[in-house]
Every structure is written in structure tokens, then in C-alpha cells.
Length: 203
Image 1 (tube, rainbow, N blue to C red):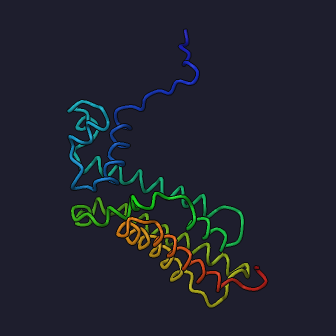
Image 2 (cartoon, rainbow, N blue to C red):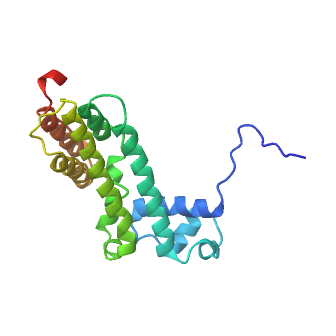
Image 3 (cartoon, rainbow, N blue to C red):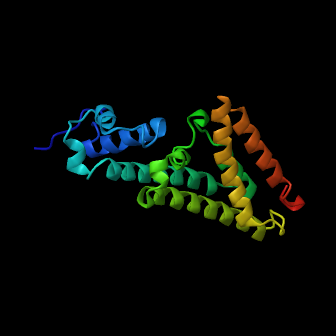
């Protein structure tokens, strides 16, 4: 006999999933040093032995959470960068997408945590994610050049690094001011620079 699920009722995620999600949230809120195993267990609403049943310890769980966050950010960026439109349109979609600016970048904030940057294992997914992002944006810019949308003199690699740096720097400026305006101004500034590279036939 098959047991049917009640319509509209969502099953609670399993213990491992709750641990990962809770750690993602806490790392974004408090950083690695400020995230204690006790806080993770309380947020996940699981027993004391649950973490060590699924993970070897805090760093192992943090690695899973960081990798999940990096994967989520990669998928979100890819949706923008593969959307219809010109290279400029797709870069603009990535820059202008909805963000929780004052919370900072979930991955970028990890680079400010000493314990993370001093750990090759924990730092690896950060480097991989930012490396992928720069490479993917460079591909979009190069594609725009091949299509005649962007000026031939534009350096796609340097342009991609600029876009990534503006986003991360914009987060820092916004958090320092407790205002999203610096982030918005930085984005508009880099879009103006990129618009200057759009060829007349692409307008």
C-alpha cells in the first residue's frame, strides 16, 4: 500500500540538509570564527551528536556549506550570463540582479575571515568560484567582440576582473556606509564604462 503525501504539506529537510543550510546562514551572518557548533545545532534544531554523525567536525561542515553557497551563486550568475540579449545586456543583468547588498556577498565575506583564508581547504571553493566568475564574464565579453557588439580593443580578461572587483568592492562600501547607494553607484559606473565599448551597430 502506497502512502500518499498530503497536498500542500512540505516535508522537513533531513538532518544533514538542515545542518548545511543552517551553517550557510550562520557563516553569512557571523563568519567562520563567530559560528560555533552550538549555534549550528540550535539553528538546525538537531541533537548534539548529529553534526559528528554526518561530518568530521565544524570545518568539514563549513566546507560543505561554503561549497553549497558557491554553487548557488554560480547558478544564479549563470542564469544572468546565459540570458537572451547582447553581451552588454547579459553583463548588465548580472550586475543589476537583486541582491541583499547590506548583508554583503556570502562568499566574499568568507575572504575576510582569517581562519578561512589560512586554510587551503576552506579557501579553495572561494578561489574556484571567483575564478569561474571572472572566466565566465570574460567569455561573454569575448563573444560580444566576435559578434561585433563590443570594441575590438576591449580586453575581456581585464574587463571581467573589473566587473568582479566592482561588485565585491561595492559590497564593502555599502556595508561601511550602511547604505546601498555606494554599491548602486559602483555598478552604474562600470556599466557606463562598458557602454562606451559598445559599437554603434550594436545600439
